[in-house]
Image (cartoon, rainbow, N blue to C red; front, side, top):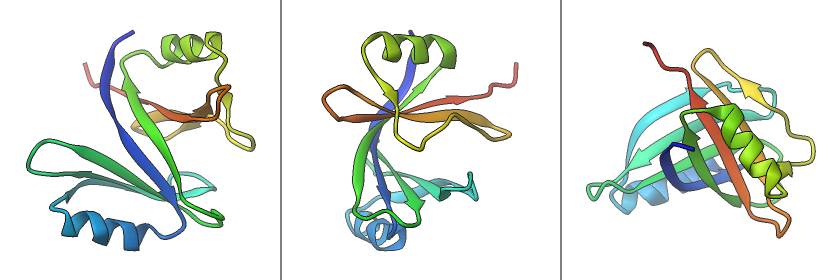
Length: 124
């Protein structure tokens, strides 16, 4: 399985506040997606001068912030099968989401940590 990025992701109902905190730490906005699906309003990818990344997703109604690992892969189906073979399942109420540029799903391990599995469609 080819992993192309692997970094922390914060899912929150207060993205603006968290983005400001990371900007104060020296992170800059690199990419933003708006109106992703019926649950996720937006997602911001940030990067600092050392090359570290953090993603911040705005999800209205989150009772508290959640931290996950964002994992981009070259083959979504292969990665999904790998994770399910290791006991991961789609988070309750979750689903595979496809936009014009990507496919993703939030999965949780048997012990409770989450991986946001992402695949970005590539132009050949």
